[in-house]
Image (cartoon, rainbow, N blue to C red):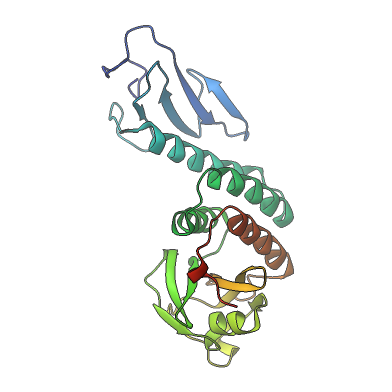
Length: 250
């Protein structure tokens, strides 16, 4: 289906096959149908033997096609709808984290690889949580924290255990909230725009896997609600992931 609704040729598809549009309305409800104004529209051609899906994002040139393999396209569809729902339907911070936990569990379902899941985790929260300038992971390797998947500007690659906010949280194995990083002794300034930070250790059976690190340009951005909510999200990640023995530290 083209952006305007006309059929396009594709292997396995013939005229008359079913097509639909899934989109988010300004009122926040998800609709399936045609010819309704949409805040953001994602058009998905559904037909027997689906091999590709066309996704139309807001602002794209009318008539332009963006064909993706069906597995990739459905993932992109899910993530786009997730972010729209989270931004429009959340009325409180607690509500936002409730929705994020449910959406994250669905996003990671069926995948057990740590790097793949951490990458999608970082992208989801970076785009869903307000006032972030960096979100990502450091994983414990050979006695130090090594940069993992992240969203934001390039970051410090290696951090010693006990140094900076990340190293301190890893050493103490407790969630660490820093309202003003410039007042934290030994703070490692990877991005000069960062003014506050929260670091959540990734633990399984008391073994340290690494840390989740979020930075914000806003002083005092993170609080106890963020600590509780992010620990819940980290639990979803750990429970959804298969960990090798060399990824765990006693």
